[in-house]
Length: 117
Image (cartoon, rainbow, N blue to C red):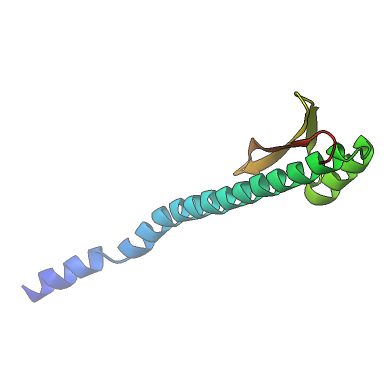
């Protein structure tokens, strides 16, 4: 009876190591996805804040080049879309962010009164 128990214990050697070797990559992928999601949310918030600043600057009559410099300082590579509906100046900032090698776009938009009031 004792020899059968010892033989069974010897057969289980390395089982924990194998389970960790299989489970660890899954944990790493989940962690990378969570960190990528946090980075994506941060980029979206920064894009929204930058769009609000851009809309305010454009409503005060600042040149588009100055607004693009602000965006370049804040976000790096980003696209600016300007629209002028009925007495407003609206700025949309679009940023491309990679999460786990997948390119995703986030954007922020804001409007201000056209005369800077």
